[in-house]
View (cartoon, rainbow, N blue to C red):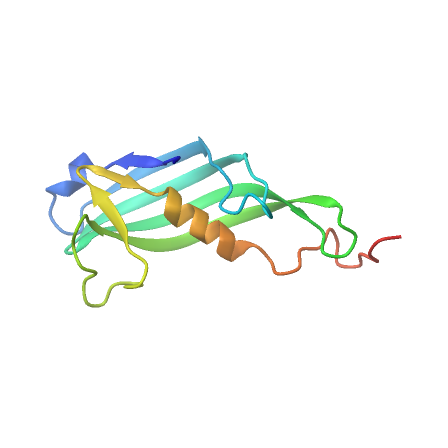
Length: 141
């Protein structure tokens, strides 16, 4: 299973509020290979902040995905800008009270945070329900 690992050794024992910036440039696999084609580069910056319950990530990433137009079925490349926050907790820990989303938990193992599941989830949430090659697309001719 592919991973996108960030080493967070400096943040593990750090005081609350300490942050570290990471530039990301990697190829990622598609979160939904049947409907979304992406083997493109994802790039941008991730700022990780040490919080009491783990690590808070501020993501600012860009990528491009290949979809089919819902009307004419032509292949289109859709640029995606991901700007979001995600909380990571230590392996085996219960989500803390007040967690951003206690149902979805991303964990830290030893001194590594795998951000790929979080990024893939955000890509899926960014895909339009009916992607169009252009607003005035007439459909199949």
